[in-house]
Image (tube, rainbow, N blue to C red; front, top):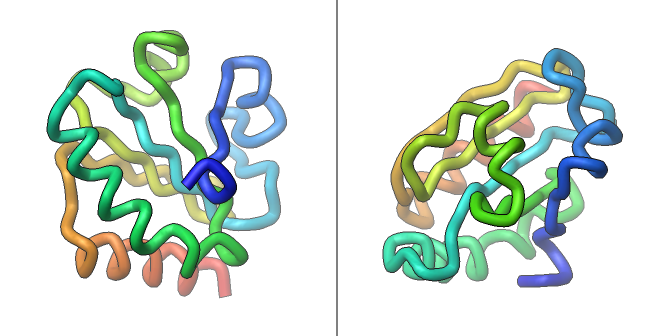
Amino acid sequence: MENVMNKLTYDDLKEVFDGEKNLTGKPIYIDFYADWWGPCRMFNSVLDEIAPEYEDKINMYKVDIEESPEIAAMFGARGIPYMVFISESGEASPNVGALTTDQMKYYFDGLISKSE
């Protein structure tokens, strides 16, 4: 999954999303996680399965909440797994908790359709 999900640092964030505007030209998915948390490790298998299918349509990033707590705070990530779907227009939709493969596909397809 390393080739599909890019690690997002605080310095990188300013080139991706300014809090109101998506700066990438494609929808954005941000996964907030911690390596030591079981639900995050289990959710990684879902991401591993579907991320390659969407990598050309959605910019995908991972944020380790312990390495980048300032990004987690900016997006209101208080529980993990936590994810944010950002449309091309900059509308951010957060979600707390792991999703199934079908649920992730539903959200990804919706994110893409907002951009068409």
